[in-house]
Image 1 (cartoon, helix red, strand yellow):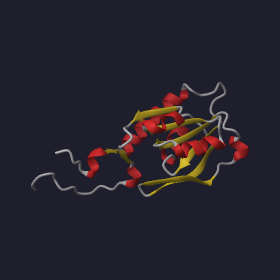
Image 2 (cartoon, helix red, strand yellow; image 1 turned 90 degrees about the vertical axis):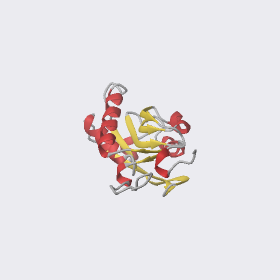
Image 3 (cartoon, one colour; image 1 turned 90 degrees about the horizontal axis):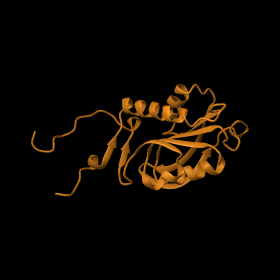
Image 4 (cartoon, helix red, strand yellow; image 1 turned 60 degrees about the vertical axis):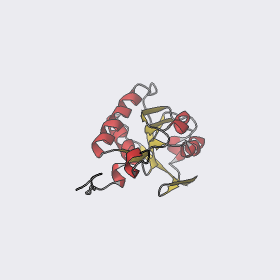
Amino acid sequence: MTDRLPHEKGFHVSWDQLHRDARALAWRLQGEAPEDGWRAVVAITRGGMAPAMIVARELDIRTVDTISVKSYNHQTQTEPQVIKSPDMTIVGDGTGVLIVDDLVDTGRTLAVVRAQMPRAHVATVYAKPMGRAQVDTFITEVSQDTWIFFPWDMALQYVEPYRGA
């Protein structure tokens, strides 16, 4: 039997796992920091907010802003659209700035963000092959056809067994 149940090609991430992976990302980014340190973190909302907060805490970065890019309508990817930009007087061209997101999928969202801050360092917790070229640092790669279930999208509930009861 080759048919998969919907959750079998999914990668389920708990809050604990996200926290560990975001801390691992911070440790990796510590070695990538400019000589005078990171000036700011820009989280790509909404998925990048939790990892960006953890990275900012771990690296003691006090200036945190957001860029809001809508590129999904539920689980359907659409053309990326910037809804809110960060304070460009602070981030400028991105020199010394970390851009943090939860995941790079096709890379289209990050291409739009990079156009606004071309010198920023882009970091994601998870990466898919099509978007990897848009990311400077990441922790875990998953296949392109894997759907990542993040903890903010999930709720604990009973699941029927595969066979019998």
